[in-house]
Image (cartoon, rainbow, N blue to C red; front, top):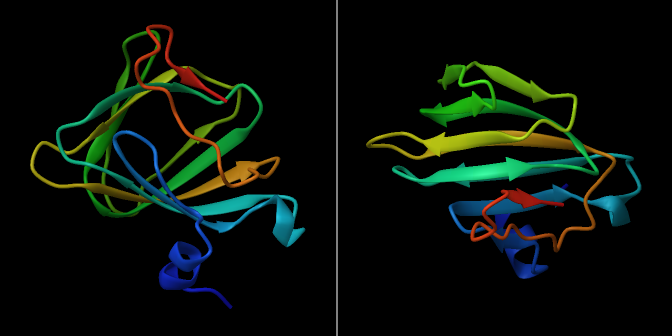
Length: 126
């Protein structure tokens, strides 16, 4: 069993540029996938791509949206899941007034220290 406080004490709470990611399970846990408690800060916008991982995100609180590279915008609210099953480039936005809180699952698992580079004009990728 792990808590968010345990993850912080282990140095696995990552500031990723537009929020935080508590890496609850990583490759060193031997489960074959990663689970994160992800916060996307209100008012932020991030161009992202996971070239080496598939990702599914389940919203547990707040609001936000994800936009694909064809301009389709999908609002996100509690109870919604979005899946990036083709290493999709996407824009992730926190809510206008509230943070977006997600449970994010990655396959294959993250090492745990990956960080985004939101200054890359092509989008942050790992």
